Structures are given as structure tokens and as C-alpha cells.
Image 1 (cartoon, rainbow, N blue to C red):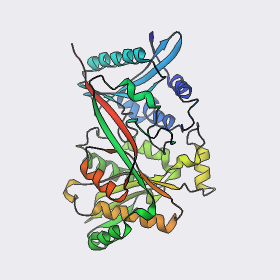
Image 2 (image 1 turned 90 degrees about the vertical axis):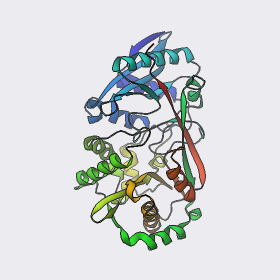
Image 3 (image 1 turned 180 degrees about the horizontal axis):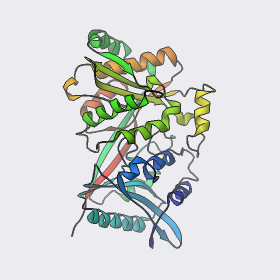
Length: 362
């Protein structure tokens, strides 16, 4: 066995090898890797990265990007992990190398399954392997969890939900909105001329709202700008909705369609996807609620309910052909978000997990 340094091009080639026979794989990975691992990005400049793999008999068997971010220096992220099946010795060597790198960087923890930031991609998929991933969702073969189970690591579960639009309790959402909505104003982001102002508001809110989240660390406006600019061709003002109180933004909700419906199996979303959506007006049938939050002092005020109602009001008015509503991941231990989401999107959907261990210094 041999540990080698990899280029981004070599890494992407290995990803294609891992998934070449997977009949459900839609490549969400390349886009995120470009945002995190290309040397000209703001994220890369704010981080230390080591892209390595293990070769056996001349063939690459597994690979990882070891990342520490300047805002998250105590933790080593075991990111973008990929591996062929039944290569436990090689993966263990990769993990040992990660531990040594963690020691060298002075880290306390290794987090397996965070791809640069929890806002980008998180967790190893643990169910529904025969369903193509939605846009932005983590995806991997079923055997990935075998590489991290039974090692004494702490397993952190995540869940997502789905339902049909007609099964959502819209009357309840409407009643809460009518009762409490007059206290708040609703505004929309701009992904054109005023994108910097909108994303500054978004960055400030997320850094405040999610600061106690298990895996969240402060993002910079420039990093968020790169992320949202990459999606700007498929977003409009309705995709990022703010709630305001006395002129101050206090909460938000972010959603989009499952653009992977417009992407062939084995391919990745690209300009053809955007052309189908923007020019040909092919609207995906799945609507995905990606992220929502409210400042702590406004929890329980009904703001999230009002924002949820606004999404469904927009969908009913402009996109009546939506057949399914899905969510992104939610930390299972986050009872408030999980129970609120489950109240309206009743059915368990995709499940994921990350793993944690201490860096061993002896």
C-alpha cells in the first residue's frame, strides 16, 4: 500500500470510477469540490487542505481531503471521502494518516462526513440507496458506513422528510400567518444587482442563528457569495425569503427545486440543466426546503410557520405542478427543527450520519 498526494483532476477521475456502475448516481460532488478545493476560491484561501489517497497494486482504492478552516481550527474535517468496496486496510491507513495530520495541526477532533462546511454537504447516506440524490444531497454506496462503524466513534444521525403538497396542513399554516403575520414583514433576496446586500443579510443571520449548531462555523460573505453565485442561474427572488421586524431581518427560509430531475444519471448539473429550467421552462416536480432559521429571541413567535406558508403560497400561485415536497438534512438531536418539520412533512425520507473521534496524541 502506498499513500499518495492527489490533484483535483485525479480525485474527480476516481469519483467517476467509484460510481461508474451506479444506476442512481447524479454527480452533486464536482460542483461542491470546485467551491472548496480549487485554489482560487475564498474557501480554499481560508483553509488548509491535504488531498490524499491510498494505492494498492498500482490502483487507487480510497481518497480523502483533510481540511481545517481558519474559523474551525480545532477540528479536522475528513471530507469528500470516496472508496471502493472491501478495502478496510487501506481506509484504516487513511484514517491513521488523518490522525497524524490532526496532531500536526493541533486539532482536537476528527469529523468524518463534513465536506468543507455543513452548509455545503454533510453526512454519509445510510438509507434509500436506490433513489437518485436530490440537488445538493450527499450520496454514496451502501458500504461506506462499514468503514466507520465499530471503531468506537460517536455516530451523529441526521434525518430528512417528504410529503405530497395536498397532505400538508396548509389551513394551520394560514391561520398562524393570519394571527401573527401582521407583526412581521416579508422581503425577498436579489440574485442580480443587489445580490451582495442580500447575501450580507443571509451571512449575518446564519452566523448568529446557527452559532450553537454542532458543526457550524462562521462563513464569510465572500464564501457565501461564491456558493450562491454558482447557483444564481437557477435562483430567483422567491428562493430566499426573509422575515423582518422593525426593519431588522430576524429570520429566513431558503428553498429550490430538485434540479437533479433535469440531470441524466451519471452526469452533474451544468449549463444544460439551467437551460432546461430557464429557457425551456421545465419545472422539476420536487420542491426542496433547504434551510430555515430565526434569531433566538423570536423562537416561538410563529416566524418559521409564516415563512413556510409563504413558500407554499408561492408554489400554489406559480408552480402548481409540484408533486412532492422534500427537505434537506436535519440533525436528529435538534428537536425543535425536527419536530416542526415533521409536523408538516410527515414522512421520513433520507437518513445520514457523521462520525466523530478525538485526535489521539499518544
